[in-house]
Length: 115
Length: 113
Image 1 (tube, each protein chain N blue to C red):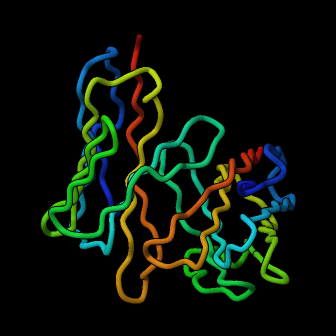
Image 2 (image 1 turned 60 degrees about the horizontal axis):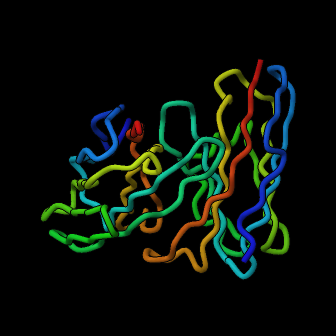
């Protein structure tokens, strides 16, 4: 079974530029998550989708971050404009239905460096 | 604000030693999960505990969920170099945040041959 795919794996940009990350979840998984993991910290949930609808985006900085999950499969996370403090690993995860006991499977992440 | 505090932050031991990692909070969680993360990879789930006082064993790893569902521990017996990695605990939200995971900062474990 293929895992969660993410691209690119690495991205370096200058502040105020825009960047987009792509995620392809495990086939059949209805729930998709985007996390931000700053160096030395644990992952922090940014947004959770159930199929193509947003379940929780309370921790997403909506003035600069946006995400979509068209057709309930792939998802993109965009930052516009980027700030220095956005430097982090962005992790995508998926689970079958998002229930309490469903396992979240994480992708390898995209490491973003903002200069 | 960090809901879950993990200790120690760093742990460096010799192969064969035993160790315990702690995850503490003042909040009650619906569940407690432990993950291991290796460099350049996403976290991988090791175990989920949902009942206060629950103990689960996975080969040389023993996980315990506190009676009040606020804290947890991970004990590794006879550590091996392959156990090296970042160990993360994550608490499951309750009520309106059910399904959300709150991660600790992690414990970086290094096991030397």
